[in-house]
Image (cartoon, rainbow over all chains, first blue to last red; front, side, top):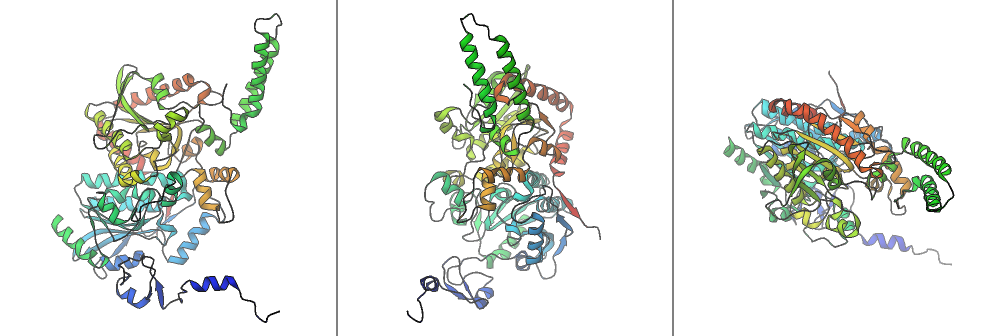
Length: 278
Length: 326
């Protein structure tokens, strides 16, 4: 009997690059291990492969708006549990957990802001809050933002990032697609510009409503954007999907978006667009 | 021979016996009328009992029943002079969506609906009622036609969902649905929506924005199919999901006509003949006709600006949230 038994399981996992918490991060794009500070200095973009890491709504707002110009609107809206949705954990618990983890009330923040001195209505979704899913509150906040843009004659900018409609609010989530699209319709009738920015990932009911309705649609490099999820498509058609399938570059190639813009050029691009549209 | 769902088996048993007795008495002297009558009464009672307490999952199965009347069946019963229109003028013609003009009690109307197809061959042609972007674009083109010629629009919803495929994504499934939602919200003509079977998520809603929305009694309408919901909630590496999970998910999703009525998403529920619309499609169609007639009478009288304001208000009002006032 040997003193130590070789544990095969440990050997296998040790092959994978283990990233120590805090100092280093692994890039989801090129799988390289990068010094975290370097990524953060680079606006959370991989310096090796230009992969754009997902960022929080607060970070996005800081990135796009002029310092201290963002005034949040409709911050006091919060979700109820209209279906009494039960699974392993209840919807209410899930909401509480998301609030605690993100410090946010919901999966979207909206407000007035200035971009290089130009006043706009800025709406930013947050994937870290229940996958950025759209329930009644998200739908309502986006609708109010579009209506506010009409009232104040301001351009509307929405940064999308969402897994789609929120299952836990059932049909009410689905109906937010129609509600937000109708509000965008009114904005268009009023002649105010709407710029939609697609970030990784944007899917389902968000893609199939306000995300794809921008007068200008911009995507961050390599963002995954689509209607149906890749697993669902694979299971349905039983085929392997093309390599760049549903990436921003794929969408650009198929005529679905206007441009792909690096994070570091996003604000400058918005400024130029807003000036042209003024 | 009818197709019976699992929960209908007790009735199926009785109906087979009635059938046997009929055959037995046919052309012979034995008179089994009394016995047949007795069994028929019993079958009816049993059916009433079963159908008055269907679970959401049983309703889902009924909404997908292979004999359930589809859009084309209702077109046959409800409209005269129907002429189908084809193609989105951009890419193709999608057989999963049927669109055209016809008359509803003499008045010209535009009719649009998902079409599932009956029998394997037609099912494949119709792609099981799952449209591609060109289906939604055809629908929109025909809706614009209706607006242009001032005809009301009647849509029938019956789809598992928009098709999840490579071509569909390449051609902008999301954009096609989104555009329909936006455009339908401001189309200058009355729109009446009837969910006749499966209301499968965004792919259903893309034909479902209207001034009046109704559901057949045993139809369902949901943000996600119970199977998909169950997979997200409970499917783990070591655990497959099955019918019991689908039933639980169907309960949780609140997808029946009664649920949607309670949420204020639909205006009314259209009663189906006992045992479901497929048991007597004509009766189901007649019930739909009543609703269309009433709705058209109201909507045609409404000036277009008011109609659009009301349509917007109706979309605007859906949702459930709290707002702190401090």
